[in-house]
Each structure stands twice: as C-alpha cells, then as structure tokens.
Picture (cartoon, rainbow, N blue to C red):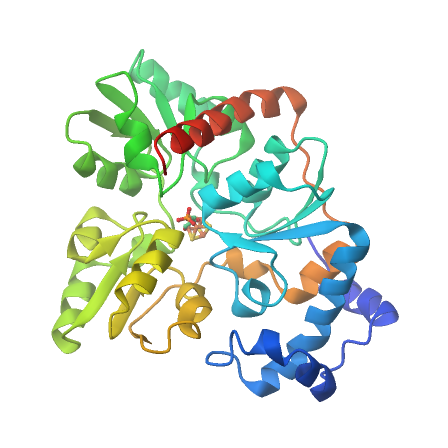
Length: 350
Ligand code: 13P
Ligand code: SF4
C-alpha cells in the first residue's frame, strides 16, 4: 500500500509543489480545457504537479495513457492519450515510448503489459482495482466451460490476466455485441459482467448468452425508477447510459455505449441537457468543449479510478513504480484473447 506521507516527503525533497499563481498563469492554455469545472484556486494547486509531470515524462521517455474516468487535471493536464478500454488497448500496441504510465485501473495496466511485454508499464496506485475484475478467477471460467461444453468464452477486458488467459476472446463495452455475434456457436459464455451480457443478449437475439454473476459497483447503483423520475422532473433531458448498467436502466436511456461512445454521442447530438448515467468525471472532462450542453443529474464515482491522482502520477514517474508484471506463460495466452478482439474489431470496422 502506498504510504502518502512517504510520497509527500520524497516529492517535497525534489520538487517545489507549493500552489503557484505564476505556474497557473504559465499553464493557462491547459487550464482553458477545464476552467468550467476546475476553480482557479484549484488550478494553482494542480499546476506545479502538471508542470513537473510533463517535464519528467520527457526525461523518462514515458507516455501517459488515461481512461475517460480520470479527473480533468489528469485527463486534460498530463495525459498523452485518452480513451475507452478498447482505444487504450489499441493505443498500447502502437506506442513507441519505453515507459507507459497507466492512469486507470489495474486491469488496464495489465492489458498494456500483456501487449508490450518488453516495456515498463507503471501503475501509480496498485490498489486501483475493479469490482468486475475481482468477481471471477480462471477457475470460474473453467466452471462455466464445464457447465456449457463447447461454448466459446467471451471475456470483458475488466478482468485479470489469468482470466483472460482462460478465455477464447476478449471484448469491451464498445464491441461486445459484435464480438458475441461473430462467434460460431449458438451458445456464448460471457464473463464476468451479468448486466453487459444481458444488454448484449437483447442486441444479439439469435444466440443463447449465459453469464457469470459479476457487476460494476458504480453502474449497478442506478435504477430505472430513478431515471423515470428524473425525466419527469427534467423534461427534455437526454439520458445516456453505460452498458454496465442493468438492462431496465439501459432501456430507459436514449443511448447506451462505451465511455467513448457516450462522448461521441454528446458531441454529435449536442443536447441542451444531458444526464450521463456513468462515472462522474465523464461529464467534467467534456464540459468545457461543449458549453452548449448542461450536464445535469446524479453521477456515481468509481473509488478505484479515483485512487489515481496527480501526486501519485508524479511519484510513479519519479520512482519508476510500480511496474506491472505478468507471468510470461499467462501473458502469452492472455495476449491471444486480447489480440483476437483487437483484430476482429478492426476487421468489423469498430
Ligand atoms: P469503457 O470501455 O466503456 O471505457 O468502460 C470501462 C469501464 O471500466 C467502465 O466502467
Ligand atoms: Fe470497474 Fe466499475 Fe470502476 Fe469501471 S467503473 S473500473 S467497471 S468498478
């Protein structure tokens, strides 16, 4: 576990991280990307970290890959590439830098390492997990295979390397329905997200889809009743839900898609009022670029994604910790499942 007092003492010895109006002014172009959601006072606190990270990134030959759920200071301030899980996995196959800092959760860093065994992949906080990833083990996949002999296993990328290695192909929220539809079998096993599986089942009615009993602690909290009531009180609001939400919640939404799908939908449609039924940082990250859209309504925070902070990113680059390691034999098998997904997605034009 990261000891924050050690982190702070160590950083204070090497960097001047005191709030700075001067650095806030010098980085006003970066701040302009988030000034609708970050106060000037907060930016004076963040600016010294942003400057230090961006300088150190160059020195270390590092690239920062950040998920759409990162806070705006990371998303706009230090990330070199932002995206959903599929985009981050594809980007990990393309980066030339020797060091990848993964601003996201552990399974994302593992996926980058699986695809780049020779590169150093750093996780700023190893405790950034995921309720879906911790809901299943490789034995769980074998149990499903024993129950449904011959059925292919399509595993969500929100899983450990061992679970991916035990699967036939991976999927993400942006390609799940197409990957399942492309399987040459009437029955398809989906792990570990029961809600994603149930949502896919509606999109691919020709197949019998069976699922593991996992769920996302962020998206399972939404209810269809909440959404119905919200619509009554706020007529005209466009409701946009991530497919990790229960199917009755997705049925209440105007659109459902991956985190990047959600961003594209709002950018294209520019609704007057939008409720993003997903993690809170999503609306914050796109708010400045879409001043005509009012983001309203409740959102839920992912406690794992929120473990990644500017301070920890700086410490990670400063100390080159913590490198993510995956057993070579496991990585070889897991790579097959991830690469099959990437290849099929490209073939299908996703
Ligand atoms: P996306 O692949 O849609 O970015 O989702 C990842 C995730 O963890 C959502 O909770
Ligand atoms: Fe996992 Fe849910 Fe957090 Fe995404 S939002 S990382 S699925 S716990």
